[in-house]
Amino acid sequence: MKQLVLALIATVALAPAASARVRAVHRSAPHQCTFSLAPTWNATIPSAGVTRAAVLVFGQSQDCASWEAYSSVEWAVVEAAPLDAQPAAYVTIPANDQTTPRTTTLIVAGVRLQVTQDGASTVSPPRTGLVVNGTFDTNIVPWTWQSPRFPNGRGSANWSSIDANGSPASGSILLRDTDFDHPFQQLQCVPVTRNTTYRYGARVRGSEGSGEGVMAVFSYQSTDCSDTNFSNQFVSVLRPDQPGVWQEFSFSMTTSSKAQAVLVIIASAATLPPYEIWYDDVFLTKP
Image 1: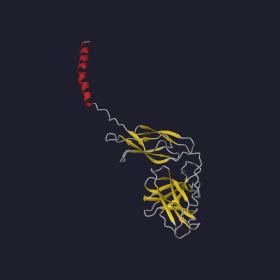
Image 2: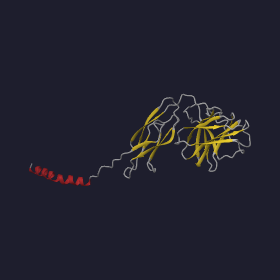
Image 3: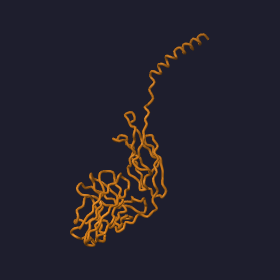
Image 4: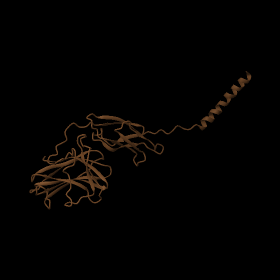
């Protein structure tokens, strides 16, 4: 019994020193990282969708330089880019062909971000006035180019299923410019009335990269735009505020005193090729 008591006393006597040794080698708690998010879109995602829309991530430091991004649904894809100059996540959401909105929650740098996308519009696309097939429902006819009468850049024009109104029954025209010197263009000749004011424009959606859309209207005295020279011209730049988001542009022009037709031209102009831009609801109308 005495031996047992002495052993117990010895154990108690040694306990403080042992615990001191434990404290001496105990590691400090890991650094606590706190991030905040700033999506670059307003409120809801349009029904037409977005391509690589940025979610800026703030709070990154040397100790907090790694984070990930997750999506639990197939229709919302998110990519983490913590090594960018401005750390961000990039969100890609395709067009919503249903009339009801849809919502999901993304996880970016450990922060929950709710994303809501509008439902497809049930309203018919706006009238395109005098322009033939300005809505590109199933193809891009009669948009073309008159070569070699007019120079044109290198590129391509194709029908796209991405519709500015989110309609699964319609589409748009996709112009891709791969030329440093000239924009890639398409046109059609439209009959007009002389000395008359018209509005022209379109809805456009740009790609990532450096470039812009250009829309021009040239007045001709002949009804088929076959004149050697045009009588007046109006050239407008269509530069979307952010890639992957549809934006509408509208301009005003007045035909010349002898005009019977105008060439309506749409173009993709790459500053640093390649550059892609989608056109939809291209119009020429009287106010």
